[in-house]
Image (cartoon, rainbow over all chains, first blue to last red; front, side, top):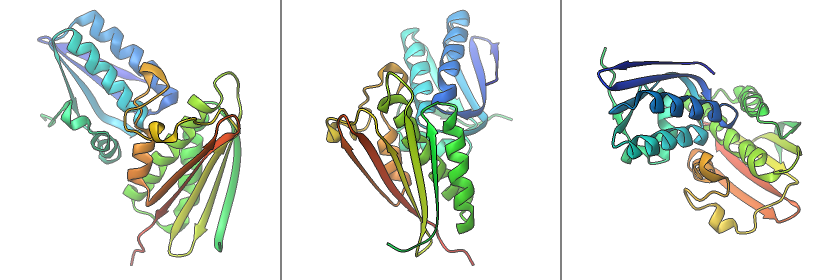
Length: 105
Length: 143
C-alpha cells in the first residue's frame, strides 16, 4: 500500500496505487482521513491512475472520503480511473455522488 | 452436469487470501481466452464473494472458504464459493444495494456487483450452517 499526496491552493490530490480490496482498504481509509484532517482542503481529488484493481471495498474508501469532505463543506473528485475500477465505480452508482474529473495533462 | 475441467481450492478466511483467490480463478479462466474486461469482471465477482466470507461468515475466528471452478460447455466458467459460517438470516435484505451488516467500512454493494458482472448469480444460506454463492460467466468465443 503506497500513496502520494500533494496540496496546491487548497486542492489536495491523493494518488492511490495497486489493488484496493478489503485487505488494503482500511489502510487507505486511514491514510486519506489523516491527510484531509491535516490539510483541510476545499477540494480533494483521489487519483486512481495507478490503481490496477478495485472491488466494493474501494467504493467504501471513496464514500468515506466523500463523507469527510462533506463535513468540511468541501468537494471530492476522482480521476484516472482505469477500465476495471471505472466499471465498479459506475456499477455502484458513484458517478451520481462524486465528479469524475478528466485528467489535465 | 458435464464439465471439461475443474479446480477446487480451500483456504482460511484471511484477508490476505483475497488477492490469491482472484489470481487463482483468473489463471484457471485463462484457458477460455477471455478479454481483459471479462477477466476483470470475474476477478471482481470472486473478490466480492470471498470478501463476504472473510468479513461476515466467521466473525470470531478463522474458518474455511472453499472455491470450486468448472469449465462448462459453451465457454462458460462456473464458480461456487462456499463457507460454513454464520449464514444470512434475511437474504432479500442482504441483497439490497447498500445494505450491510459490516459497519461504516463496508459499502453494501457486494451482491449487486456480483449480479451485474456475472452472467448468472445465486446465493443460498442456512443460518448457523453456511452460505453458498454460485455464479457463472459466459466467455465470448473469439476468432
